Image 1: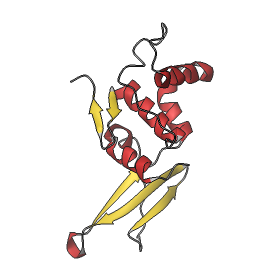
Image 2 (image 1 turned 30 degrees about the vertical axis):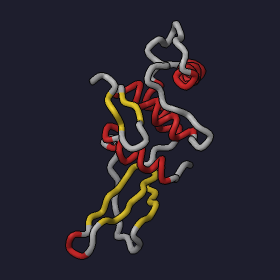
Image 3 (image 1 turned 120 degrees about the horizontal axis):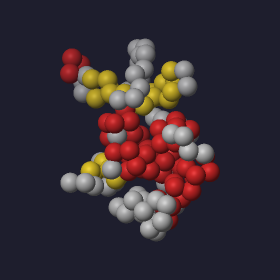
Image 4 (image 1 turned 45 degrees about the vertical axis):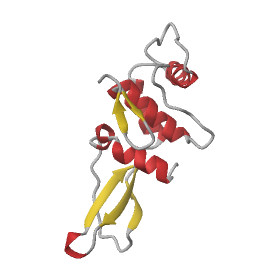
Length: 138
């Protein structure tokens, strides 16, 4: 499971994905913590001090949860082909809309980061610019 700072930031900024889960919360004693609620993984952290302190929580989807968001009625091998076409960056006759404005992959990207980028592009037409999700239709 990717718990890197980059993946947490990508998840936190994906408002469309975050709206799909709500977690039960318990008191935190540390400034940041990973929290497991059933099968879901959450990252929680506090910002501010004293009465101004605020709790931020971020759902960290697993790879299988991300795949389920875009799978629909497809067989898994077709989803894997579509996923690979997106990152290959070619214009494929079956998936012509993929391979444009795609996520830049480097050696440090986890599979969760790549699947989140794929979900955000396919479902919401957004790409990750390193800091936030950019709508590619504007």
